[in-house]
Length: 247
Ligand code: BGC
Image 1 (cartoon, helix red, strand yellow):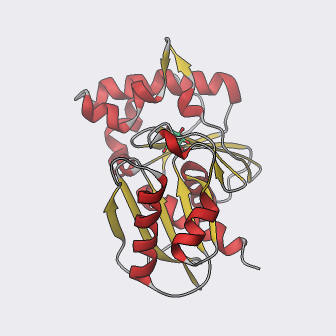
Image 2 (cartoon, protein in one colour; image 1 turned 120 degrees about the vertical axis):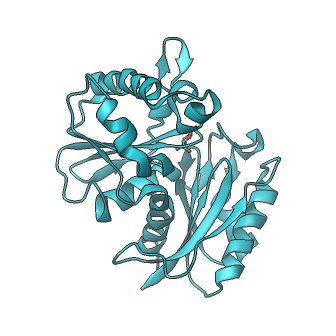
């Protein structure tokens, strides 16, 4: 059984049909640059283009890099502000002609990691962070998701945490792995004080290079492991959620 998952990010909109049992892509992923300005109509057109590219019928799962409640986007830290208050599920449904489920990108990645990746079978409190343009978070306790946690926006030393410690900031400020790991350590220690996770999973594209920075993170008690599905987790989780919403 396969279903189309689409992941909307600050820099790219990416989609692929996903084998729900394994998380494998059944066709080569399609990526389109996120339109600038990243207004709802333009992004919906990108989602429709990806959907048309793969064809088929049935539900589509779409992630969004902000808070999503009942299909409505409530924040847009790294996309155009005009997204706030948009019924994204309806907008994408009209643009694609298919039933669409919309959820937060990190929540989608977390769902995929819990089912098929680094969080598989994990008990207790699992905190998953996606390190990309921003910092996304997904929090699970005994396998149940508490959606829209937004821990990337915790305030640290007077700054929004994701403006200090995201993967994009590492590149923009040309930080060494060591310096970046230090910033992540400060961030994760803070998170640990608040929620005492029993497992921390670090995802996003940079998790492919986990050996360069996870060993340099210090002062955090919980085990820290890299995501297994890396940057594909959002697409996989989106497809899983769409499958669950099928009538
Ligand atoms: C957004 C989150 C999102 C994260 C990763 C943050 O800026 O507020 O909703 O999960 O970026 O895209």
